Image 1 (cartoon, protein in one colour):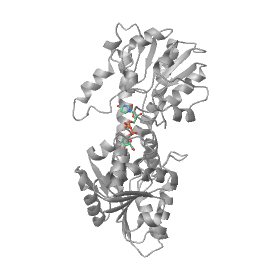
Image 2: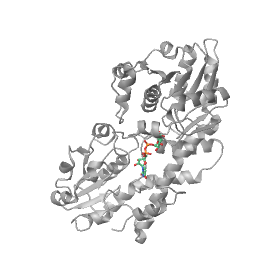
Image 3: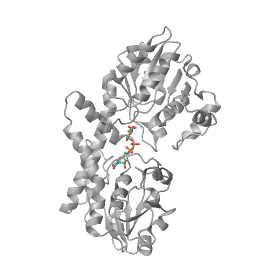
Image 4: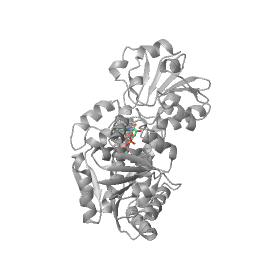
Length: 432
Ligand code: UGA
């Protein structure tokens, strides 16, 4: 199959590379010349395990290429994927500026019939709008149909999730488009859910909203467990063994961040608002998540009432481990709150420091190792469960800090590990 992918951001690049690996001929189009050149030389602008190897392999086997030229990129393509960003607009809704631009570019350059497939997370109804926009601007006498094929990739395991995901969702109101997409995806050998356009768009939002709900739910249970003397780790384990509940996404902590859950939960609430449909559960999911970020600082403040000029080591800044992504990372709020209390903040992250410098206050200092961050610190706060942070021995806190006082926002240590370590340890949802 001949395929074009518009946008070589996170989703577009992984989609293009993986489709070419199935044996399809893929051309990825992006306006960023430097990026395109880098990609044609086999260098990935993002780090994802296994991605660069697949990129190099498929470039070498001449099934994959990158271009800034729409005419060349779209020539003789049966499928055109739209995989551009849909950032959050001022009112919480998804901003479709890039999607609309992609539609106009397709309309001006498409020279043959094609199915336009949307990968980007877009509000319900957007695919119909995409069809109308392209059709209204078509320069050549060609016909198009549209389909939705949402992605369910997690950052840090995108290639794995593409080949080993739980399902592939394809939605279209055109039977032929559905058949074509089914053929394109057959090589992944994953269960395929075929549905109409609007249901496919809704599946993406509903899935992310449900996972976000699971996280806020377990955080609410954690806050209660702590107050009544239960241990949330045991509670989550006992709950998760019920297959109807499932064990994943029951890790209590300081809440969800990243480029998807915060944006998509707000976007679905905004979709509801537009049709006068209240979303009380999701409003509270967002609210619980925002409050969860304060909990760790409130606990610290209760224990150390005057934080002025106290050295606080912040361990982990990215929104989750194995990524340098700082978008909506809980560390942004937490460091802000610590600085408000006049603490001296020294942060350490294995890879996100450069990105952190762009978004955190310039009053934050950065250390180049955990050892240096905690040296002579009054308090340490763990915000991201990097392996390196989980493996940092507790006795090192004891040896290096002024007072071994650790607040763990990601429950990196079991209470058994902490017992007899000499560290005063506070975590989420567990007895002190
Ligand atoms: C999420 C979804 O998991 C993907 O299926 C989806 O495709 C993607 O959004 C998207 O819409 O593009 P991602 O944001 O990369 O993926 O990261 P997750 O691994 O889902 O973690 C999101 C946040 O939830 C992180 O801040 C993480 O720390 C937090 N989390 C996750 C918890 O606090 N507890 C958990 O048990 C799990």
